[in-house]
Image (cartoon, rainbow, N blue to C red; front, side, top):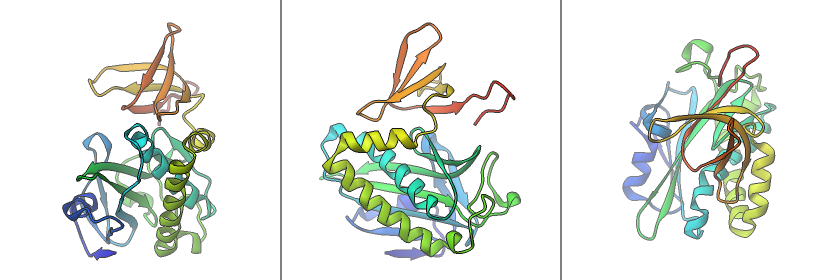
Length: 240
């Protein structure tokens, strides 16, 4: 494990060498990258920011499930802190309407490895959070022991190992478990696609390849492999 006092991006640091089994942890991340090129920055000592390099030993068909496995691992670890999370497809970890963690998975090297970057808000106050609607373990009511960064870090690595093993040995069972944890299913959503277009509908299921199936208002179904999902809340006008 490499512990850095500060780093622009733990994913970039981990990908430089891409050593299987290595983990890069930063006390402060100044230019972290999220999905869709969003930034993810963390103040010193308040968040958990790290990247793990893994060789998942999966066929190409199942590589798109790795981000889902990482999200489920973080959610399972957070639950042991006394906080009840949900997953927004594909791998945002939410508590209520607040985003608690974000994940970026990148494929690199030959043979390929997955660089799994995780940013988890742990001890931030409301004023220290980057953007609304975000939250932290502290704000979500985690007990002191449950919000200890070292403890949470260990739990996430253990859960990540278990979820990747599940994915290797029983991909259908893994997807079924993910579906049960995914708060997007059954929601009215708006999906922003990579080409900039937007589609609204009801999120119906996640298929065996990790794609989100959205039933449009015209009765057709859109299968989304990449996109940004917003949960629509028509009753009060809020969206997450």
